[in-house]
Image 1: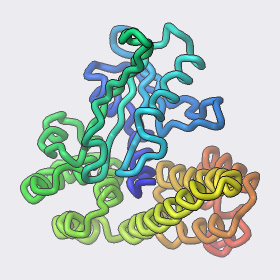
Image 2: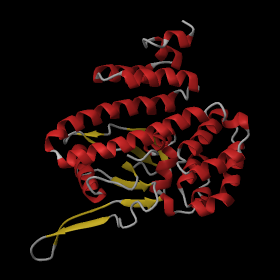
Image 3: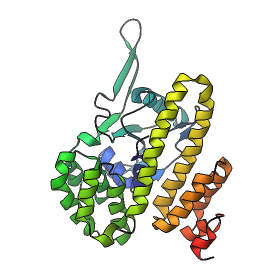
Image 4: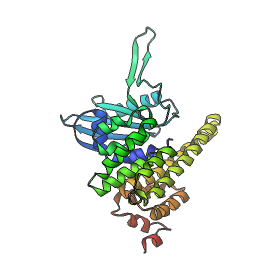
Length: 322
């Protein structure tokens, strides 16, 4: 698991139309997130969008976020994703699949085109997707799209360009009239930054009232994601050597997935201050019951404000003043 996965999912959920027009290179009328859990052994995709293009055609846009390590290999994962999406949505489905590689050296040998031949050298099976190596890309490419919603991705682009590009990025974000949009974009820049030097560059460009309130919250989740990523890697290594641990590993992975869904939904809907986010974090860390986490996810999706969510938690009443 890359520590940038969940901030990226939040970004795409919030600005789906901008991502769709960028990745499909066409004008879009509407974008709707759809079910991202496929039927084969709970095969999960990172993001799946139903996109209505300006010409009226409907396209499924599948986006995966990937760091350096992929088990199984991304080509095989994509074969599973693409085939199940077609089985689920039909042979007439228009489908584009994109992999955004976020960490240095990730995906450098991924061509996005793979074939299986029969015994006579004929192509029996072919599948393709679009690998985008953000870490190898110049941030200028993102700037030239003219889409402020994509600016947080610049934190993941080629590091040697950032000292020249980041001041312009911060200036553009400051110019956004919508205060909520400015906050989300600044938070996105910080949340997607795992390099300490890049983080320092961004923070040096910001004045305290632009990020001070949210930065500890973002840092805490980034550090939490890194710790969980290392733990996940160790668990996968143990599972490879001990078949009897696979079922337990899958159960733990599902529970962790629900916890991360809580984080993603909380950040995308409420962006709560650190003190209140900490109350939720402590509760989530203590829960090992899937039903409780699913109920919390439903509450986060339907609640009109974050205090209403906290009020239902055993440790939340005091933080809301109830």
